[in-house]
Image (cartoon, rainbow, N blue to C red):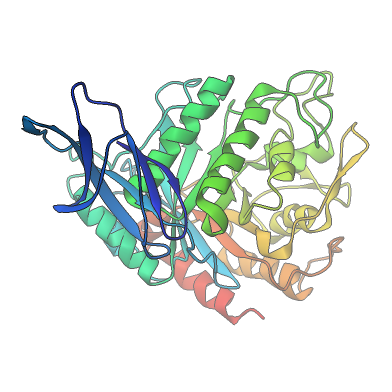
Length: 420
């Protein structure tokens, strides 16, 4: 059984035919909700933004079969409302890392968006995304799946958003074919439905996105991995509706570097340069928040045509200003348009062990003062003007922040809340 569609008050289901069946009975738990003769059913009169799990059995004159495995879905109509300035973090849900495992129920209430790291493909080009909780052998304190889902519901009831993050450093995803695209959509939908998640975070790194030579039009890309990703994300957004939260966490290499080099037309540069730009452009009206990783980055040229280096306020100011102002894409004659203020955040490591480019709390606050208030800019002139509605801060990761005594959360959540 699988969920095939959702609306604000219904969930549609489908399953394979059983040989010799006269009809099928659909259950929610032990409650019979509908009986049908075919292999599809729509359960209606449901509440908006509510989660349900169903199973199906076949029957004929000889009796009734065992029930199928359950399929879970969440109706649309969920609110996408977020705090004006949000605290966003990644939770190591599928692995321990050196920072240790942290249960969903133990994530502090300060975190507004929790990105589950990570959904990963069965192979680079399969498009078949899988997610599972950290195994007990690696994380002895891991909660059960039922406890995990209960904790997610509690976060959502408190107004938090929980997303599936796909990719990461090790999860290379290349949707080279339409078949891989369709598998991506169905497998990601299955995970979202199973856990009742609020949306998707796209954290494609490494060689997931590369522009083919000659793919020079940001507004009309032709490279299959780009085209198929755009199509897949549009399908997911359409399926789940306006309540679907879509975020992206590209590295500076895939976004701001496009001001200097664009992979579709550069002669000797890496063809991954700026490769996120056509994806962001295509989804610009559907994107909830873009939080570029301002870490693990080399020097990047800003709109002042100067190189900026990670680790200080200046880097966050210059990189974020490019998104607020828009910028020309090298060799294309195209100006990548500015994003809305509320779509922009920036990312920084939670601690020195979490990634290169850790920025002290004081320097992060300086960057926020410049970007939001137009003060304390350190000599940099904002091309995009101030962004009073800047969405907030992202960090890798919640686990590392816990390991270091919650310095990131305790320093930045009150600061964000005090911004205008």
